[in-house]
Length: 456
Image (cartoon, rainbow, N blue to C red; front, side, top):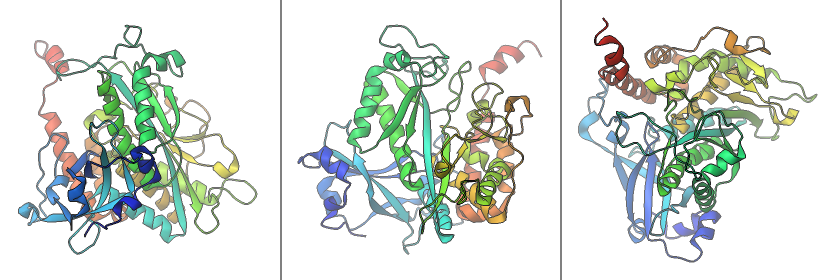
């Protein structure tokens, strides 16, 4: 597919404002792999402008988080390394403001050579779910909340992760949620995050200090699921770059430090009628609709079956601890932050459902797709939620899958969700996750050496 001669005219206004008459030096053509890592090609802008087509090998989707490759038994031609076609989405283009050269990054969709979408590409998985909503005349709306830690540089994986040193010269301490002075402690990093986001055309809703030492939360404005997933994809990179510029690390691990709370990516979700533009969770007399309860029922019933997409690594399950700022079950409640599913206080027209189970280590395309798929199936089939919980949900049983292996077993046993997400993707995903789980079990931890070496 050739690049149109007027491709610069297709770029967002925010990029042209940042460019301010300068010439683009380089273009990064990028996609998100299964982990949510940016993969692609960088080239001079003049080469991009005259490119007839760009390709990436299918193997970019076969890698685990360790860099190993998986073998797919039902794909005999897997290692022929056939090319996939990159198709630029100019609406998903932004600046690379930390680059020394004037650089543009463009998210690409991935197609097979016959023009069909590649089913295992995470962005296509999300588009598949969004299209299912459209088939019903609905449009999903989401707003992610991004939690992450700033840490001291950790170049030896055998050493524990520590909070960074702030502007006072002291190390950050925990339980300072909403403290303005704690945010100001890392002011230079926050300033760079704001500057990079503005240069990329992103609007930060709020930024706060979370409960952990050096833990920050950024809330994004609500909008289209694919657009917001693109933003999270971009944000992870820009936050890391802002941290490195200020001699610290940013990590999106679900549980990077033993004594600190984990990091989540809460997703606020609502659905509007495309024709009327009204929130279908709300009735004409401003009461919760049956579709609202169906969406809730889908979240409550089906999130365990996609938890491996919301909590995708062995480390993810360390976050789900009683009384530690993360849910342990899928009870729901009105303005109840101890439940896995929360209905925030709002006006009737803004009625929405917050999924609090998702970890910040997720691939945003896959997590949003999985959560919306659960809600859609709930609405389609009329699933009913349990009664709302108004008390402390931490006093109730822990009923989330305890580890990645159990979560994968549930994922593999739900054909309805596999149909919604695509069998090609589901086969690849569970193969990758089982291999990652097996790789973790081959590592002997310091805990085992400390407590088992001489005591058993």
